[in-house]
Amino acid sequence: NAGVMQNPRHLVRRRGQEARLRCSPMKGHSHVYWYRQLPEEGLKFMVYLQKENIIDESGMPKERFSAEFPKEGPSILRIQQVVRGDSAAYFCASSPADRWSGGYTFGSGTRLTVV
Amino acid sequence: ELKVEQNPLFLSMQEGKNYTIYCNYSTTSDRLYWYRQDPGKSLESLFVLLSNGAVKQEGRLMASLDTKARLSTLHITAAVHDLSATYFCAGYGGATNKLIFGTGTLLAVQP
Image (tube, one colour):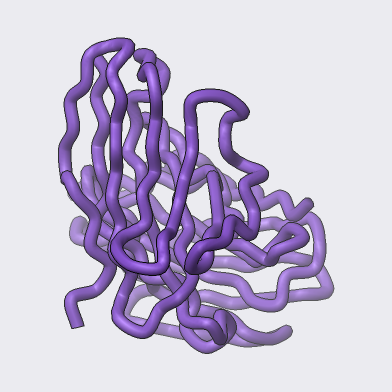
């Protein structure tokens, strides 16, 4: 079982470019969550998705950020027109449908640097 | 919505000493998690506490949960340098029951 796979591990973008972060959940997990961690801070919830559905996006910035979890393929967190303040570590986690049984498993994260 | 607060935010300890990290949460959470994060790394699950009075121990770390007081503690016994990391507590909250994290406690164990 490969665990939660995130790629890329490190991503450098110039201001104004787009960033695409990918997350493949653990085998058998159907729920995906994205969190952002700014330097020296805790994890802030961004969005919770199931296949083809956004369940909770209460933590997503209103502009430039979007997320999807298609029927086939990984979940994608997309940041358009990146700014320096988007520099952070972005973590994806997954859980089974029965979320009470095992909690979340986290990926290794994508560290985004905007220059 | 659930708010989770930890204290202290930073803890410098000497090897061999004991200390406790506190995690207060604002509303009912069905369970409480503790995670460890090493610098530049992902989160490693340490404990899940399921009910009032639950106590779990792994090595030099012991976690407990008091749901009436909405308080969880992570106790460190005879600290060693390998325990240096950031520790987070988290509970389920919000309308969709997602994990909400505390601010984290950066633990530095000095020789």
